[in-house]
Image 1 (cartoon, rainbow, N blue to C red):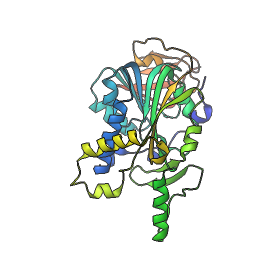
Image 2: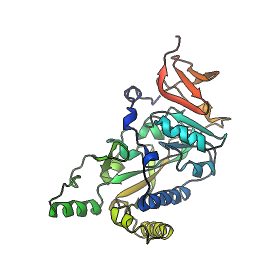
Image 3: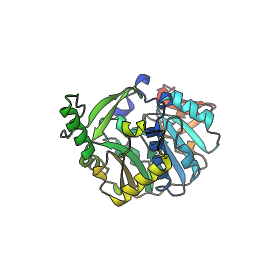
Image 4: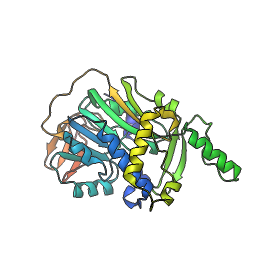
Length: 316
């Protein structure tokens, strides 16, 4: 199994969880949201099961419900998951509280995974292999990162140096770099495009690399009363098609295709593919509790929300 004990034992402090519910959206955020929705819509196919990994309060989950039979919304923030469960009325969705770096799902069981505005909260991407292992043969994984290889960051650094301001990021540093984000209460990390490609698991191929983010800045925000978001988004997507060198852009979306063999079996409920976070074994249901068949760990089901963050010890 690909369950990594070092990841299982690390539970993130609630204070460090990105809280997008409290963010006041600006023109930049609205444009970013619309751009993401368009990118997702054009890069998914109809399927059985999809996972919105780190999906928070379900900002983009409706796109998956339109195209897949079942959807799993997974996040570590209880506040955001509860909000999602309250606002999304569908019996085809399962809400799971869990560490998104190692989704507690059966290997080779899902058709599509997306993780938007999530990966930049982690300094290393060495856990991507655990995520793609959940994909069935031919399944896809769509995610985005902040790309410090973009010349835009070099220009920003030189501008700050010329004005004797704090640079913040070192364009020439090859290691992932973090800066504090007061809105989400966490560091946001930037990675070199080359290092991003090196992080892609060997079982996958890069089906598509899409560069965006040229208009995600304070200047655009200041012009919010004069801009048409729809036109701005369409123009940015057109630009990405014309200039296809993703490394030039500050925000990069990667669409990975899993080439590992192993087709998933049809399931009647997404609960069938949930696995123990400790040993990776199947779970049996006992009223509102799920118990691991092997190690006895217990997980509470509260309404439509399955809490898998801190399993309780069962009777061995």
